[in-house]
Length: 71
View 1 (cartoon, rainbow, N blue to C red):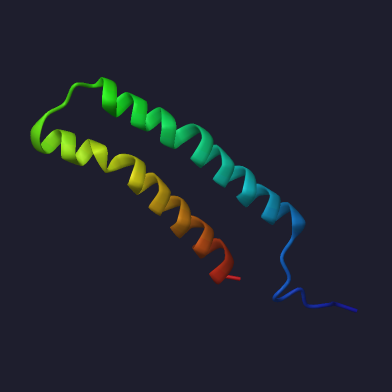
View 2 (view 1 turned 120 degrees about the vertical axis):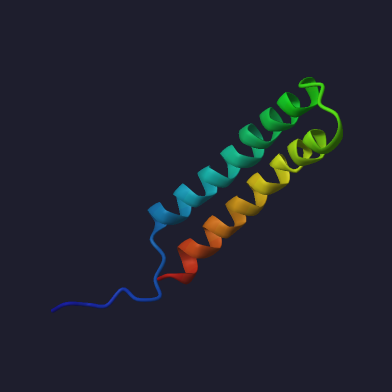
């Protein structure tokens, strides 16, 4: 009677991941880049602040990978 759903992806999970990726790429990264550029930072602070968009993208990739490897 009970069926195993191991190895199957749910449509809702896939849609949620796609929406999350679109929001990350279309909203979070450009806003972060704009804030960093308008902050008028110099030196080490500017270097670290310029890495924030990259860290957002890396975090998104790690999140997606962890969602599908832990099933």
